Image 1 (cartoon, rainbow, N blue to C red):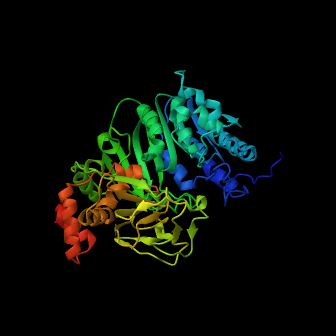
Image 2 (cartoon, one colour):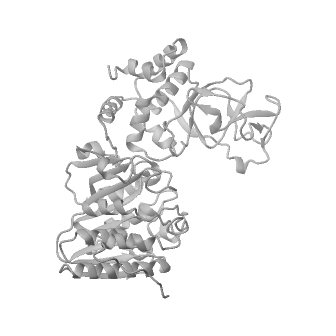
Image 3 (cartoon, rainbow, N blue to C red):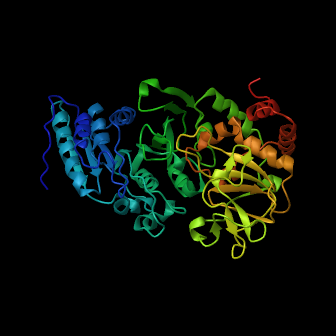
Length: 492
């Protein structure tokens, strides 16, 4: 294929040229969703390259899912050594642009007395290199720098099957890129990734975290506080991670910024134990408030299971129960109330509301319906930029019905061998709606989805404290945060 490209400007930096070429690339503004392409902003690429250790000559660098080569070119700009680069790109059309950008980077480095030896491979990275997950072979690379693709794989996908060692449930392709590339690093080598934050916690990434952080030690983490500012279509916070293939721990540099304006970022250092616990979950305490909240919550020894409680996901999946879900009905005779995410507000469950179908037919839905008793209802998803990640409401068997339906976008807390008391129901809902718990939850979760697994693992205060919150709430007009701060002596 012949491509017509603009010529570089005199002394134009390679990453700038690659970025400019990318603006001519047809999918630049909407990305190829089938390939999970989200191109790296120029300022972000330079930030990543500036913090990637480059030593040894030649320096062996891997850029996988290389795209336009913006990250590799940014690394070449700061290199003071010869570079051997392997760039892997599955999209053959995009690889033509990548070739052109890397040829210019070669010329630019040659003018400065340095060499760049490039190898562009048009291949599926995971299928090509997944054997490294299983065999202790010589690791060929000093560093990996990448913005990997982002999309879910089915369990039957050849990439998921060949990387089964790090797969749990329905994997996301970017985690396979991270795991395989870590296996390709020499001891002392470094990886620099920009990805969604979802791997930092949650059951789906548990195998991946055990594998990856069993080999790699985090050295620097940068969090983008706004989901919109980096990759507009990714409904999660984005994270830059620098990790070293090592068994030696050291302090981790944490930083954050609202966007790609790195001049406005905050920075701090934390011990490795504070960042990566025995559970291999990343905890990012980015402010003094995060530290205070972390100390308070970690001092709690309770949990849902310790108090005989459980959390589950609503069993009604509407598209699988289309014949049962109705826009109107006769409660409690032939229908039951159906509670959706939109019925749940902070500390308030309203039914019916003017949204979708608020009824479910009881006949034929016996296995989907729940007894009408006390529950704490929690939204499983938050809006893209919603202020509060956790939204909970006490449901105190309010409706005149023997059974209710709870839709799949809600989680619910209950006591399997009995009932939540009204005080426990209100107290738990208050705690989960508080800024205290929201702040703690955000330390390890940047996902819009609030999973039952994460909530099941949350530390809880003494059960009597939860009950007292519920009793005080029933007779007080004090706001949620005021109640919680007073109860736990915060910010006095």
